[in-house]
Length: 187
Length: 235
Image (cartoon, rainbow over all chains, first blue to last red):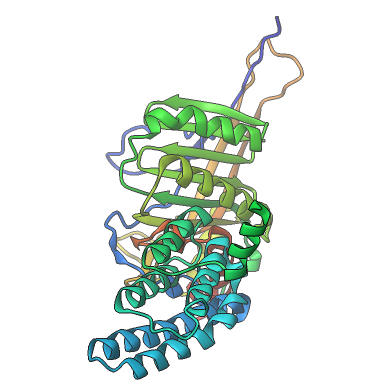
């Protein structure tokens, strides 16, 4: 049987400190130099602060942050006006949000989770076919949009949980013709 | 004034820290089996309950511990493409298997080195950046000179921080093969280096869905290359 000799050079630093104990040779493997500072974790960071160059190098990410921010303002507006009983203004705000969704869908290369949530919100609102969106449904939309504003790189599996929450709020999250197609296939 | 292009990138590190993931005791074998199928040349260095350490092609070091995980590339390419690609896969598998719901800290560290014929030239090079102020003349009754200068600062905000260190390091390398091994010669030499060590990190909590490893590394690397001159004497 062959014998494997693993030989390592001895690497020592030329440090000469008074009172310093004799230094053990620095072994090359393992490297064990990782990152150092900052043991204490501060609060949550805003996602767009993590990617400050998105405007230049990943425009779809910068566009998504802007549009999501605007969309969430509209949905908050819709919730507030609905609370006051002003359903027309609430519906207007929902339409303003709806107008942003196709462009947001164009940013779906960000992640599978992002694309599937935007698609589900778009279909949810489109399938209302002009009907009023109730406060529970508005809250559900606000929640999923806030989630992808914070976590645009959401895994598809996690996005499915959010989409199911839309369904639980009473939305149809897929195009209505899917249902007819499924019925036809069943027959 | 020094320039980042004068230095050679010798090490790139990505590290994530998280709350104790006790599930590591159940999943360690699964994690490393998955890594081995991704990178068949993985070679185990240590395996203990709280930490497993592997090496890949004598170029990468991968470690998963109960509260942190890191990937290190030695002598990386200057565009870091391979590092980013592997780091992305590594972090995804760690998140998935350890069911991490929050990062406490994410850090990206680069170590650059510039060699000099002797430590005096290396020291003068650091002093020439004017990042540190040094006295002249006779001090402590010693007509001396500066040896092994070093400066280190942390530049931080609430959302990100960078620890920057510039240091002169002398290393002595001794290699003596055992007498019964033929064909190997002993080697003894010293190196005199100026080391630019930059640790860029997010000290805040992060959700896995906030972090796209490739995107974050790519943007951060660009920022490091763009702004390092300010810490190498261009102020």
